[in-house]
Length: 309
Length: 247
Image (cartoon, rainbow over all chains, first blue to last red; front, top):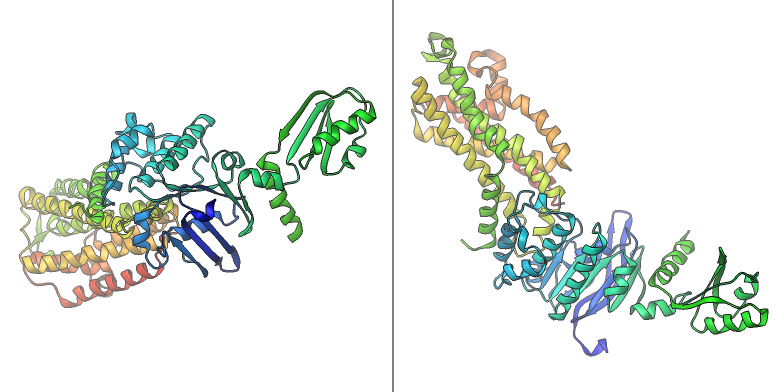
């Protein structure tokens, strides 16, 4: 379905090195209009370098980037008109008030969004006279998002937007991101939070050591992982874990305080129940759950680490 | 005035007005120092050694330079290294505003504060201690502009050479005392003679001090002093531009 839409952002063979260190190693991907695209990976994986290259703050050693047809490396000024950016840990002048920041950013764009309703919607309406240095982390983050949106961008990059926020503020920011997408803005979300990527993103690129390890929908990534389903049950009887591990598709089986957990591909649950019946074990509190992105992510990033070790 | 650059400059002036400490050191402290020194009777006595001027007359141009030192060495590099460290410059680079506009804004607000301070100092000297106003207006203007340019050049070089705000403070402190000394804050450079005087005259503030004194006395500053300031300014800006990093 994505292929029918226009790509908002095209990255083609991006490579960027800092001296000896390869930060981004041949990354290629398309982000389509109106999607929330996640770039997920551990710290130092090359996520920030990638988005900074999209914003034109860095120029790749090789490759090509287009944002709605604009080359950010040669025409940074034009890119700033279609791309809103919230950078990781970028602050504002300590003594600038919320309102001053919103007004300042409004002056940057030819047709800015009225800042007052935007501030209201971001929960900043009561803090307009407060200085940046006096805002909480969550408020600073929301102001930063407001500034990224004020120029009516077609694409917005949000880099580590919920880092350091409490769970409630996180949920608020997530609602906001969905809101932004509803308005037709393409969102590129950079995160190292699995939960965030799984909750928000239509598609996710898992990046590690400067390369894309996998690119799929969250469900697709989970299914491809070694723990697509997780079966757990309680039992007081002795369990033969070895025989469970030998079942087709099972990747892990462990027992802890009478609770047994079996991870594996789809269909493993039925095989486990079958095996328990043969062993004459009656499982209690039997649960079958879809695997999380965590497991898929760890698979993809860890196997690679072992391979390069 | 709706261009991004104008908006940035306007915001920076508004923010600068909130920096009470910076305003104190740049605008108030020099005239405060002049006022206190002027209370000492011997400072007000005209002396034949000083060409019929009093010590306080010599301190008027010195306190003008003092406010330049405060602005360009103490407060401006601290602000700019702070901006860079906290990602403000980087963030501006993702908007249609150029990050250089914030540098321009800082230079302008500091220059304005220095100018205000200089007017106060010169008027205070005239009204309270009878120090004559600059005799050569054109000479004073040239010397003043060059002194301000070389000061901001020192500030720019400190900003560029400091990877973070902490280092900026240390480098600033190291540069601060020689600048204060050569500008004549501790004692006017006029009291020195011979080689020491010649060496001081080769420093940015030594030359600035000579030039401002000449212009105050009514003659056009000596070209060598103007050349020393101009030379320093060119070298400092070249260094600053070469090593400055946006992040």
